[in-house]
Length: 139
Image (cartoon, rainbow, N blue to C red; front, side, top):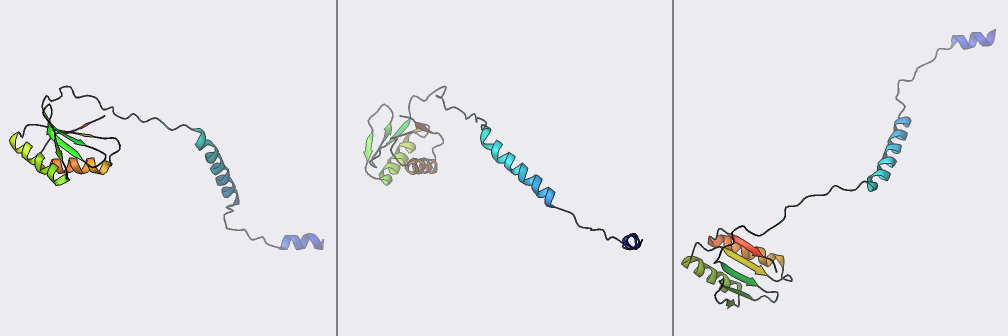
């Protein structure tokens, strides 16, 4: 009887800690499931707006042609275009044309091999001169 009396006399202390090992196991299984399923899902398609022709294209407009070699031409569409050897000459000529006919919009056409920055700079400078309508021509 001594063995049973010894067992009965001991008091057990309860642990007041949370066992996190099962939670870690569950999280690892979920992580593996997401890693396997993620590449299998196809990304949703994004509907981008389509650029179309304007409903009423202007009959007269200022035209700037930018070429890949750095040269540019400017003039009124349908009339002869003048070569502008430098960017300052191009902008000076644009200001002069815009002063004579402020109602004309601007159309910029550029080669596909030209730097995008040159087109953006031309648009920004045209906006600074006061031209409200600027369009791009695709070739």
